[in-house]
Length: 389
Image 1 (tube, one colour):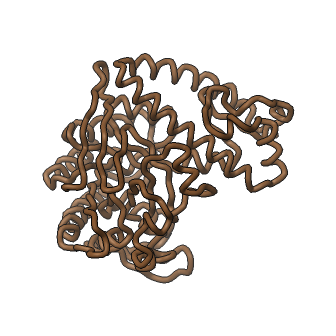
Image 2 (cartoon, one colour; image 1 turned 180 degrees about the vertical axis):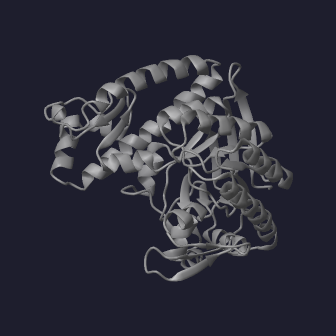
């Protein structure tokens, strides 16, 4: 804990939004923050240098994928994930629980852990709380996560309750394993976050949050949301979880990633976000802008020599036109994927910067209203042209 600290810099006067700083062994992270997803020790199409230029302060890696390939022991031999991928800023690794359950149709869950087959070769593996802590210690991320059992939406109360009991039991075992395991190959101390589950059942969400708070984790994630439930339900669950977590602890909303949802969650007191949406959409020619999503392959951009977003300061908008990027996509040029990803991630980084600035000026609600009005109204107009290629 000597190497980890969360400090609130400013709270918005008219909402629960706040600006904070997370101190880690690999530098500070200014919140609210969006973490690009580097599932396999790489944010697809980008280098670590690209990520720094974009302004990423922390990235996310995945325990499940890195365990299967290239293996946590190899990464440990390389000096840890930071050295392996040449990234000297903070890293968060998730436990791989979501991937185990979402990528495998046949899993066997017990008190011991979860047995699953690799999606690569069909080989069998067992993730226990102790095992995922061992793997994450070897990876050497600054923030690591407990093993949890997420449930898909919709699910019965009984299914959610059973998963909740396992998640809480596993969280306690993860914490004990984290205390015991001392990896002499790394000079810094990692911190372990708990994950609140409970599906869309308020009683279970509250029970999960209160039990995890008693375990006194340095930070808390809210998992199992944005899986198809109504938006109003999503944010009801967010509000409930936030009300249970001390203001002095960082709050991480897992996998929620549309600009509208992020802005809404910030207003409710969330500090950390991750999602594959900006990178995945970019590789499919769907780009984020202040005026909504832009489908760059649409024919209307064939002779449009303006930047993707006139207000964007990314290197792509400074140097290339919509017409050129459309040409790259339509001719199958690999560079299209990289340039589109740079732009969309920069948009997300800039979104965080604008939100922080508004909170510091006590004008967050006004900024949110103006941003969403411009973004959502134009997004609907753009959506009418999705099929025009």
